[in-house]
Amino acid sequence: MDNRNRTSEEQSGFDRRSLLKGAAAGAATAALPLIGVPPASAVGTGLVFVSHEKSHEVVVLDPVNYTEVKRIKTSRRPRGMAFNQAHTTLYVACGDEDVVDLIDVALLKRVGGIPTGPSPEVLALSPDEKLMFIANEEDSSMWIINTSDKVLQHEVPSGAEPEGVFVAPDGKSVYLTSEVADMIHWIDVATGNIIDNLVVGTRPRRVRMTPDRKELWITCELSGEVYIVDAATFKTMQVINFLPPGFRQVDVTPVGLELNKAGTQAYITLGRANHIAYVDVKTRKITDYVLAGSRPWGAALSNDQTKLFIANSLSDDITIIDVANKKTIKSVPTGRVPYIPLVDDFAGVSAFGN
Image (cartoon, rainbow, N blue to C red; front, side):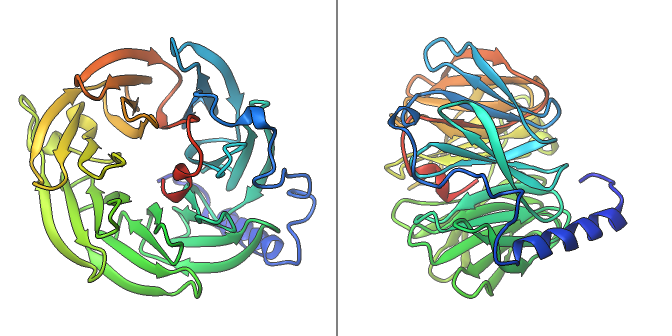
């Protein structure tokens, strides 16, 4: 969390709320591209997009040799990202300028921005793309914005430092983690009200739902755990602990989390433990640890499920892992403090969570 001037932040938050709650977003967003109306060339490029907190850019890699295609300058401190369903627009939460940047995927260029609350960290889109959910880290809130006119629809108070956002596939619920409160919030999308709160491990980060929609998996960074929660009852079912060979328990700091399409395998980045854990979803057993770079953070699976892309925040690179063989294909230096990778090789799924 940055030690920025709270007085200016509060004033900025007031100005942005006034802007977004108006009938339109005004000149700052008037020229933004329409969601879901793209050139055909923008879909399925295979390009890999990586946000970088310290070099203030999204780096684009080609899908064959993973060489650099372009560096897209963004607003300061880009972190969470999400594609629209057609993969023509990439939304990027930029924490130090309180804005979600919009990048045209075909042009590989920033084309606009949406004002947010203080320090947006991650975001997600509803399945129908009508709503955007933004975790504002320094405002202890999640904003629900109408994507058609960029108007703030609901402001949901949360525990301190909200981060992980996941929208249920039916679009009716959204789940939000609070790092400081050690809690996950279950929120009703229609009303913007919290349905229930659940205390989990220390500093919860990411949320994913199994494809059968029965379980929520939550990484808890400082307690070194993954919590598994019953989605129907919102009660903890099980807790998984990790310890790769040669590391101490204090080194294990899980953050990134991905599930395969079949819902049989989970992949968890272990932060300072420098490994990726493979977990059998049914048995909850850790089946393997795979070495990545220094402090693996964000993760993304390719659409064909054969490759796992890992952002290593301390070694400033991306590790590409062969999922089946559990071996590194390549490590690619990218920029300062990579946060999360996204792959433009399918449509729709990436909108649901960050």
